[in-house]
Length: 219
Image 1 (cartoon, rainbow, N blue to C red):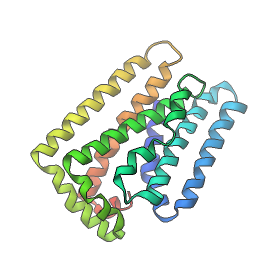
Image 2 (tube, one colour; image 1 turned 180 degrees about the vertical axis):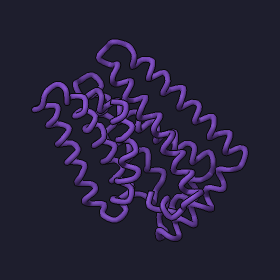
Image 3 (tube, rainbow, N blue to C red; image 1 turned 180 degrees about the horizontal axis):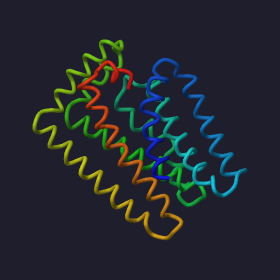
Image 4 (cartoon, helix red, strand yellow; image 1 turned 90 degrees about the horizontal axis):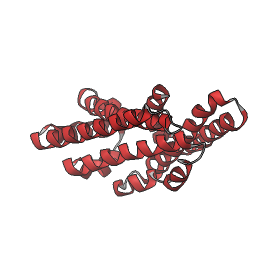
């Protein structure tokens, strides 16, 4: 489950991002494919697939928020977290149902998004957001490359390291709770994996921006 949870964090970054950039409506419709597949696995297939089905339902919530924002609202960074939180009420309710694994995945991803956005504000990178997303792929790459230099100053690096350590600590606490023999154990393991993977994806994105900005323009 931790492997699949981590994979489902990476998937939106490298598949959804370029898809929604060019074909936002079809990317949005794929939300219902994920939701339908996940619901079917839980409702009509054996118990072995219940956890996977619940996870896919959680992925559909993250996918929906990502499509809505990056498809039509990406010029407004202040709306990023609120739009990504579109399924937040359902996720909280789902924690006490058979959909708890999907809810835990969605909430962990949302927490990772909150960390990312907060660090963008603290480091000042968010000021360049509208210019980057409004530019062509070539221009966006150049702007991202210039913006990434802001992250290499001592104060920004210190803030990023502190945030990274905090994420690692929280994920470790989740993983420890996941070792408990309880129905919620798998939820904590999935949440910990999702949060940890968010950290590695952000790090990979930074490295990609510095080394190959043209690729990061699609992300």
